[in-house]
Length: 135
Image 1 (cartoon, rainbow, N blue to C red):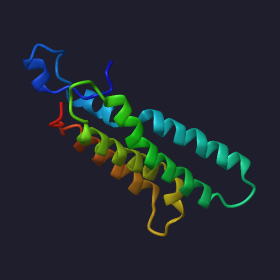
Image 2: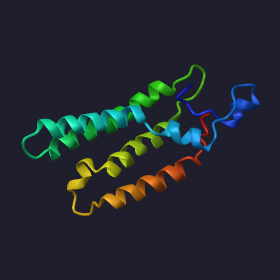
Image 3: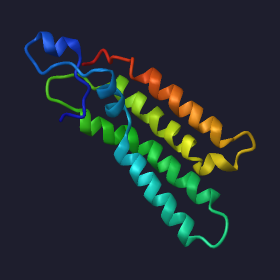
Image 4: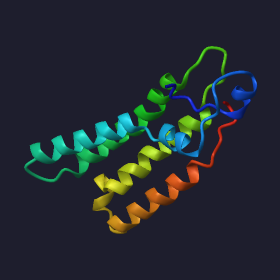
């Protein structure tokens, strides 16, 4: 399965069928990076004797930088434009997932776990409707 979202344009040209709503949601979520985030936050929490806020922010920034780079590599296909829309949405998805899980945001005064859950649900429902023009 290609990581790149397939659009109607490819299907019309004799290619594989276009990705549906749920397929797009799955491909927009950078699950490998989110999985690494979960593992690293577990390591930080178990290894730290004191506050972990700075370490969480550092890992968050690294993940936010790695996400578009990783997705650019995973979605690159010869003869096709860069999957900019998918890469940007996936980078936003990483931020939304970290926010939903708490992470460094949990230390901010406004953060509430329910808010993270609502943001994740709304984001996921909306992005599935986005069909990237790059195909």
